[in-house]
Length: 120
Image 1 (cartoon, rainbow, N blue to C red):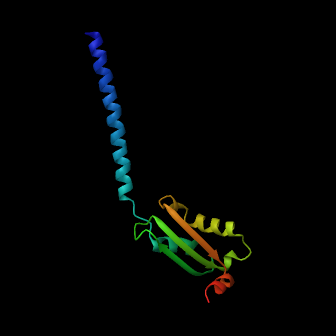
Image 2 (cartoon, rainbow, N blue to C red):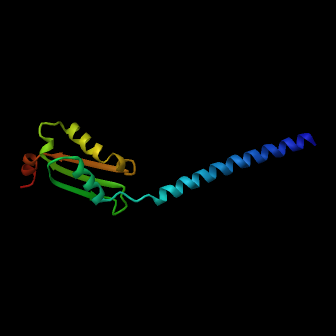
Image 3 (cartoon, rainbow, N blue to C red):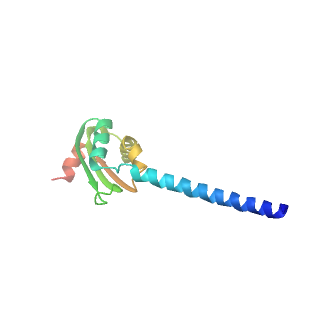
């Protein structure tokens, strides 16, 4: 009788553990479901507020509105004298929170002078 009771307790403990893990997964899934997707307008506003002297900005959602893949072009004299790495870091810092939700992100940063040579 004692051995049978111990076996039942073990089974119940395993059930409780699996039930807890399943419940936790469902809550996480539900929380993800209610998050607002990242939008072109939201990214544009964050970049414009963080980087001074923005001359031109193009934000393109490559995921057809899903908010998972973006291509960004930022033109600002703020980038004058900065390396490509420092320019990208400035933009990444501006959209730090959004980057946690985005799957793919491409950013090109130019000064007004560089931009005028590209766009003829």
